[in-house]
View 1: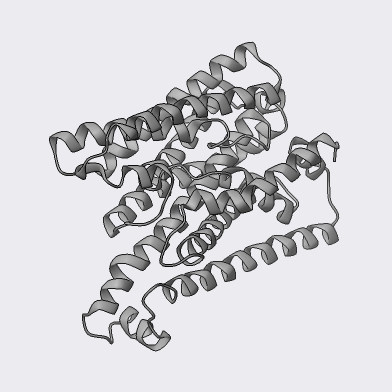
View 2 (view 1 turned 120 degrees about the vertical axis):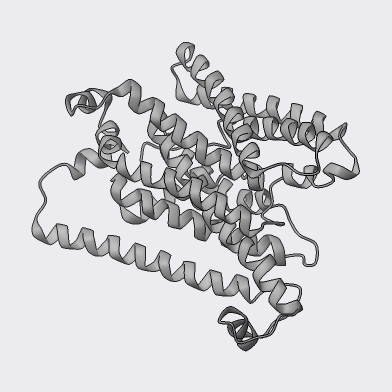
Length: 353
């Protein structure tokens, strides 16, 4: 990553600049087209068949209230938008963690951050559902945020003693296993009618989303995305090394805290609503940087968010329809597509390419 930016820091010819910008435009055009296509495909696909003409009437107000209208507006559209928003958030969280640790293998799932968030959210759900019939979205997001910070705190403590990144990643995986074991223990002894969906949530799913979920996630993820874009310049400087970033006036301590907080908020929002989702935070940033042939934050950040949205919408469609009417967990599908990419990345790093 830092090597890519150091290469780009050299003066470039006008022809190279035009070629680079054309590549950026092509990648964004492909991502935008893929986003539009998969939205239409998701709306038009489900256990209940609805014709394209009927869907257009429902979307543009030409159809009366009915079963089809409720399916589109109350089930499919909220789920599609949440898959897009949370997929983008998870990918961006992975990008920030990779910047923080200086390693493309770092991600919320691999480092155990998602598992920590899942553990605290499960505890919160059990506590609140014993005293009331529901849990607010903000309470779940706050609980997931605390869980994320707990996991990151352990990782940072370990990082002071372990300097080798591979060993640090193994430590993160072990933290994730511990948190997952605690969560499974909680779920096992919490089987009652009030938390019947807890087990499904703990495995990851975009089902059951509502417009209130969409509004909360849009606000939180939107603000975090905006703040991340504002940090593009210090992120670019930090990618070239801490010494260079300091020479450019970046307060390294505050900058690293900001990266951790922003990444934790994004992964917390995803975990609170959809549960833990694997490998998206590693695979998507890698694919985007390879496609753009750059690690420049101002370009990579929006592309990573859009790429994560497309990736998760595609995986959610497969999860819904591969064995319909039975639905797969979203992490099952993201693992099938994401894990081979991570293996390729590790082999590529091992080969020094």
